[in-house]
Length: 267
Ligand SMILES: Nc1ncnc2c1ncn2[C@@H]1O[C@H](COP(=O)(O)OP(=O)(O)OP(=O)(O)O)[C@@H](O)[C@H]1O
View 1: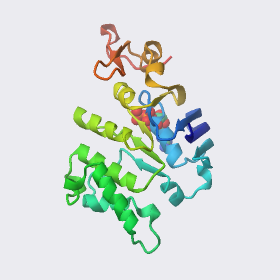
View 2 (view 1 turned 120 degrees about the vertical axis):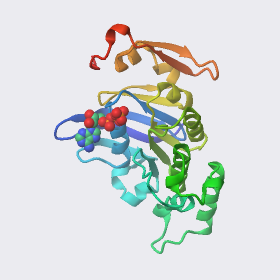
View 3 (view 1 turned 90 degrees about the horizontal axis):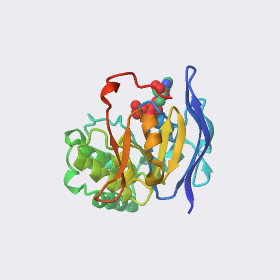
View 4 (view 1 turned 60 degrees about the vertical axis):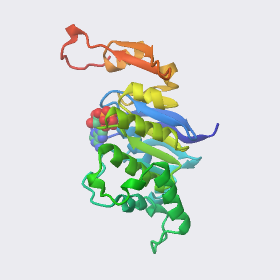
């Protein structure tokens, strides 16, 4: 199957610290991939290096065979849409106006949207079941509704790749599952960070496991989530089981009494 995103030998360091080290992977077109790993592993930095391009980063990133470093901001925005954690919860815009902002990278200088573009917006509204929210203000929505609207705005960009940083953050279990299930049904390539390994395993075709700025494992959740490596990476005893509802891999954790609140140290 065709690779959508190809990341080769990606590294990034600041003056003080090496943050990403020699990361290489490919995403198959229309697959859903979750980046997992402990706090500080470099998950957000990896996403940012793909959609922003960071100062001093080295390596190559190609989307649909085109090197992203050859594209300008608008061309990248026509191909990659991003939903970050820092969305503006105080944004006092009506939902419909916010979703239409996603069209910006495709608008001509005079700013009118075409009939086709309005049809595209209508389709997104149906797909994400947003009709009832259109006249509400974004800052008056629940966290789950806001996340759906932001995904709608991102889809309005007609991206080839949708990148999301912790899309389930601050959501209750209902909305966590709703959002992740929605992402699996979009038919575009999705790359997201997810803290909960079990949610990631349930809804992703592939996982990228990061640790200390390196990609330590990648592949299908059932293949790469093993007790020894996950226990080592998260410094916690782990038991691997199966979710009886959908047979996805399920990790069970146990905090050992003697460990108490010692500093989290990595090997
Ligand atoms: N702009 C930056 N300047 C300096 N250091 C940075 C910068 N961005 C990230 N870092 C450092 O890089 C490391 C990885 O951070 P990053 O946010 O990518 O990790 P993460 O896996 O997403 O963490 P978390 O799960 O806690 O969100 C951290 O030590 C962080 O302090």
